[in-house]
Amino acid sequence: LNNGISSIGSVEIFATINDLQKSVTNSNYDFLIIDGTPRASKGTLAAGKISDLIVLPCCSSRADLIPTIKLGHELVKNQIPRSNIVFALSRVNTASEIHDAKEFITETGFKVLDGCIFEKPGYRQSQNDGYALTETKWKSLNDKANVVLESILSNLLSE
Image (cartoon, rainbow, N blue to C red; front, side):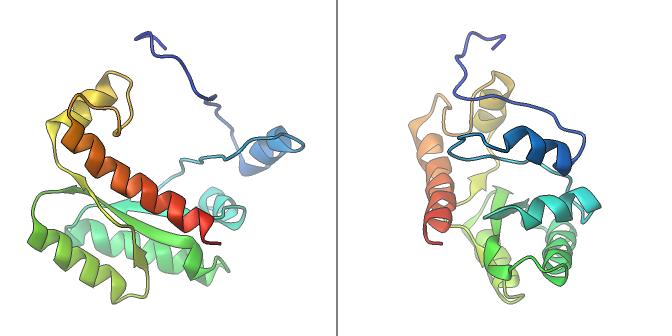
């Protein structure tokens, strides 16, 4: 808003998932995005139980993949369906690292979204200016980010 970009929705902060649920009860939102902590806290588990889809972003390094996969397993252990959990590769650079990361994730029984977010300064610049990853100044970056977005939507609509 500070950059003169009009809003397409609201951003609200809630202390707990219960507060969120009270706020959205009897509302007519088309969708709700919850940005939570990257660990299996009580809040993350509660959010997961009311979510249709959980997107776990991760880099391709094992230092990031292993704890993110552990989070996925923790969510499953707490009665969140494995089919509701997908991984989104981000900050990647090469086809070989994308292939290796996808193979590593799928061997653990989780699904990986189509596409990925590449490590590009254009994405950071876009976010710094208040825009989404699909709203950079470069069509090629927008197209790549849109593949991930379309994969998220496809996973939501397939249920």
